[in-house]
Length: 220
Image (tube, rainbow, N blue to C red; front, side):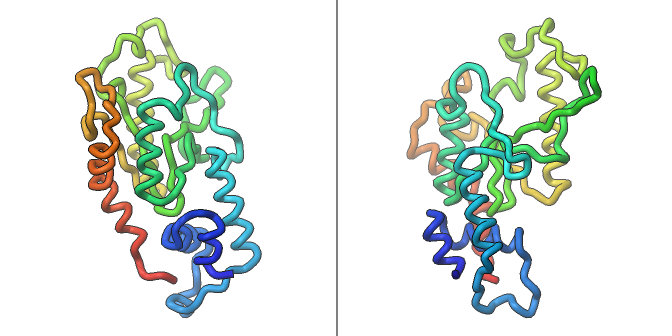
């Protein structure tokens, strides 16, 4: 089977699939530029990857994404923004993805949980984080002093600490990190999005241009 035939089956672009295949199954230098006939292992692994991404599970942990309290993530501003990114990148990002090397602070038992990222686009080697107001300024609801965390600090300080860890560790492990904020899009004065789709889509297209251009490399 060719990458193009498999991409059509999986409902993604051939460029996205080829980018993922190059990262997952590097080809010998002498084979680059030649026709690529996929092995059974490559086909089945790609199918499993797409199925996992569609279920919004971590492709490394294999566990369902943890549920969040309050409004469903898919209905939030973050869900709206990530859905637009999916369209523009022609890839379904793995929501609430975790990596074994991105860990929170140890708790009382010294255990450290894996910190989720908003979306991981494996075909682009890209992590996208949508950071709302509480990531940049104090918000009383989120930063109540009595809300102490395993880190021994209130939630606002822990959030700052974990954001810095993501900013540092994700590029250190060979992935690109793109942080999107409400101010990048059509927001109101409270930092909520008006969800003006055409305006937001144009803004995101410009923000994602380097990532979209990255996949336009010569095929293997």
